[in-house]
Image (cartoon, rainbow, N blue to C red; front, side, top):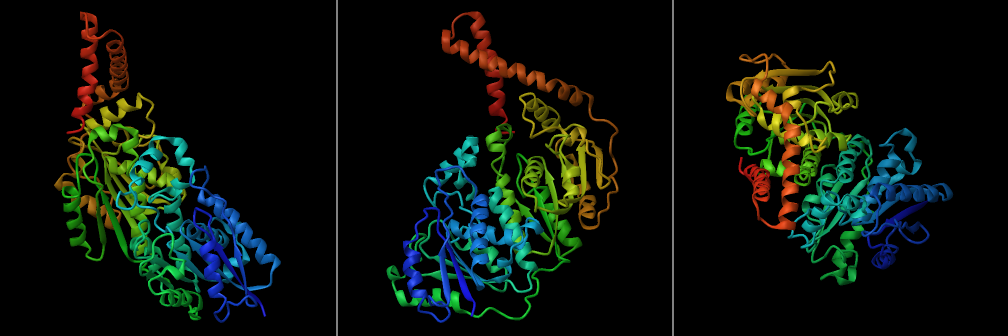
Length: 526
């Protein structure tokens, strides 16, 4: 009779003592004795303080499992992971299913009977002080210091590219299986890193379940002897290993006809302005459409100017999309964004290949004209795109143009100049007679709703042929002007530091220094 292969991958610490003790208890269960099972610990070799990626660890672990499978006579496979080990195993399993291409398929993936997770970081670590006092500082350092983005722990943060890509692939691949494995996520009630919202990807499927363990922390939930009631804890754990797997075909979850629309505001705004009005309009025209009025709080122009803070909420959007997909695995997604919201979308699409929208509408876009929409469309991430431009959009025409003078190539004037790529499914609507939010005036919202719901690209009335000449002139001058102001600021500060504020020339230079500094702080309130 074929034996069962039980693979355990530990947490980031690499410690296996608790699993060894639990394994001895599991061996007392029917079907899990030493004669029935081959228990293997597969080390991942990763450390929090070293460079690395979870995807690379998963590749190595998957190769190890494949070697075990080909050299042993196994009938089925049980995957067990603790903390980061759960992420490693989930990625290794997806790779073996062929999620990254048919050449990656491995025969053992079809024999995975169940996946048992102990406090797996399924959604990533939430960067907040109530989880751990050091997390906000660590996340900030990872954004500021590029070298830290290559460290293994960066992959474990909520909204990281790895976490989001894993979640999206997991939802789509597991949903497509006729006989998905049983999935159990054990969660300690005293865990300060993993909480109930880390299990949304597990609970989404009929074969998935979250099981709370009373009094358990993130580190000791495998240690049955430390539980307030050791026998009850072991019974709960044992059920995850012995509950029969359903033999009937599991139908896909979600409704293909479901529509989800994400509305995302820009700088100096929230979800109580045009977002609220458009949501009400969409719901009135189609009550079955789920409209997500997303918000990341008020975001000033000063924060937008700084690359560190400008990138801050890209991961937030990625995580929010994955959460919506977990709730609506078969739905069609659409997007309407303004200003900084278009920045978050554009760069999320570049980082997350599995992020898909049927129709996208951009207003006041701060993406560069060279943004690769053709690539996004060819990869199936975007179906149709509409870009609404305004005639007097100063934040785009002047601020974004000026910042490009400092070689900030991730932003640009797409909301005024349009995009260079011209795929057949792209529509440029120009020019709305007004400023940064002109396309979102109440009289235009009905047309936006029609585009989202039906694909109607009929341009609104009242468009003007050209942008305002003064705005165009300032846009052309912005890059050199910003460079001059920046050079004046640096020179003035150096002179003041070396010589002090004495003499007319230095005082004049100090005045020049004050100009960009004052402008910088003015941007914080406009």
